[in-house]
Amino acid sequence: MLCFTLLAGLTATVSTFPFIQDMPSVDNSMITKRSSKIELKRQANCPFNSNHPGAAPYDTRFPYLGAKNGLPGNGKGGIKVPADGDTAHAFEAPGPNDIRGPCPALNTLANHHFISHDGIATLNELLDAQQNVFNLGYDAALLFASFGISEDGDTVTEKLSIGCDATSRTSPGGTGLLGPEAGLNAHNRLEIDTSLTRQDFFLTGDDHTFDPSLFALMASTVNNLFDRDGLAYYKYLRYNQSRADNPNFYYGPKAPFFETTAAFIFEAFASYGNEGTPDLATVQSFFGTRPTSDGHFTTNSGEKVPDNWHNRRTPYTIPQLAGDVIAMYGKYPVPLGGNIGKGNFNAMGDFGTAIRGGVLSLDLQAVECFFYQLATDDVPTGLTGTLDLPVQVLRWVTGKLNPVFENYGCALKIV
Image (cartoon, rainbow, N blue to C red; front, side, top):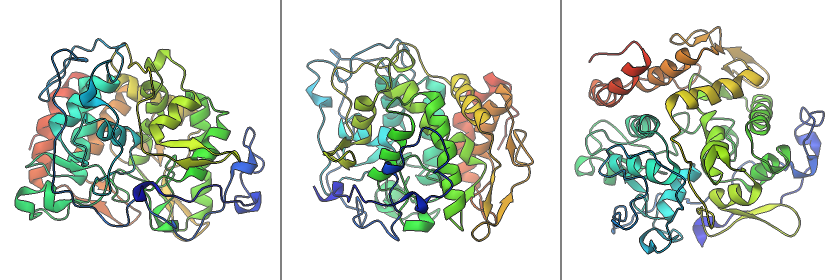
């Protein structure tokens, strides 16, 4: 289908990325040259689907973790997803009018109707699906969903586009009273430089289309075992790659939080989560890709839960999330900041209580509370810009998150 047509297997030499050639455990044959643009984007324009089905209802025969209507589930995982006989949540490839974006987990949830197949999700759908499918703790599910909606969706309708700007469908009456609701494709909001499998926005004009060459580089770097140590090193490699190539490179306060995109692979994508093996077959299914005969990768019909897959037995909670961020960042504690022109890196200063002199604290409670600060503070989106939260949005997000983070001893905002 047109949405999934990408060029793969482009060849290049290591001279394209000269800093990588001396890094151990990297197969240089997997490194491909950056093009000046993505030749065929997943979706060139934001599609409109007049049919908004909503998430498929949960059948009482297949309750999963019992999360429903945005409320906490029972946290008892180890369940096969989709359950045998649950045809309502069988894989269905997206059509040309269905929105997909940069997050493989959300794309997978949409392709299985755990959130609306058209890619316009509600808060309750997101909370239910994250718990029932991946066994995220209610606290972590609420953090991710609230963060996404407050940054890129609508806090009145509580809707979010998992990809492109669909303000006409996410805002009240389609008017966007508080401005455009850019969806998850928006640069430096929830999709940032150094993505695992997406190119930097400045280099291609597209930071949301899956790049098979980056997936190949990731698979080669981790030797097809996507565990914490391997992915920490790959994140370090991507940081150096972007910092060297991108004159507008920006790795700001949100960047450590998005270590979670890597942690999700070994904590939630592996069958049985942290007890399972995050191998290539499993990970490529969630990323919607497959190997080609020449050793590269290409896209397939869409992101899919692997066959005979089971979710985590125990919930993945905010303290565990913070612990993974600390472990991954702590192995390669790179400075936060950005480039003002190629090769001219400027480290940032302080942010909140967790970042001092452009370096993230490795204290667990400081990082837990840092997650709260990211969701409720005005956060720099570049060296010269800040995302200011309107008071209506701030009131909504603190209303959602204050009860959660009060339990972690964080200083709370009262709006």
